[in-house]
Amino acid sequence: MTARLRPMTTADLPAIMRLEEALFALDTWTTAMYRDELAQPDTRHYLVAEDGVGEGEGAGDEAGVVGYGGLIAYDDEAHIATLGVAPERQGEGLGALLLDALLAEADRRSPVVLLEVRADNEVAQRLYASRGFVPVGRRPRYYQPSGTDAVVMRRERTGGATGDGGADRGVSIAVRNERGAERPAGATGDRTRPAGADRGRGTP
Image 1 (tube, rainbow, N blue to C red):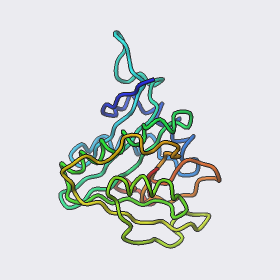
Image 2: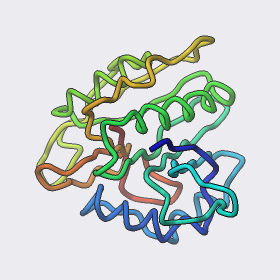
Image 3: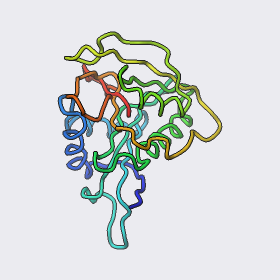
Image 4: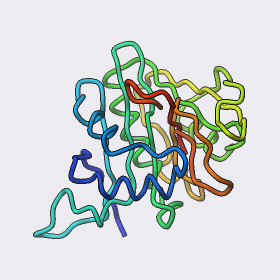
């Protein structure tokens, strides 16, 4: 089944929160946090992936939301804030589709994009590397309570395509930067922190 991307709205939040619980377990964002993010379009860019809708159906049909992603972007740098794909839809290229759309917006707004990813998530690191990210640092014991390190990755603005849209085949997609709570073994994620949050988010 094909999926399309569109801007996230507050009508999507019930579906987003269900995916948050499935993907990020101990590090779920709240509805209030998402409302705050969506209220800052000058520096935020949030998308959802939804299954193709037919005539008479429209945006905000929460049953069709199968993935989502967010970008925090300023004039000097941007951060991949969050990225998640429903567990049953992973491996279909949706994570790469969302990531590429976020990177296109990041290139429009900022010269550099940063993210954090778990040091033990080598598959996700390969996906990011395929989009031009390179490791530039490490945050010891960033993800708690396990004490897993985070790898900081950086990508500079490019003028060309970001890569093969199917490059996330088999990737467990869920990301969050700078919020750093631990997901249980087998969970699908890592994730960046919205303004005022005292934790963080990551990537695939």
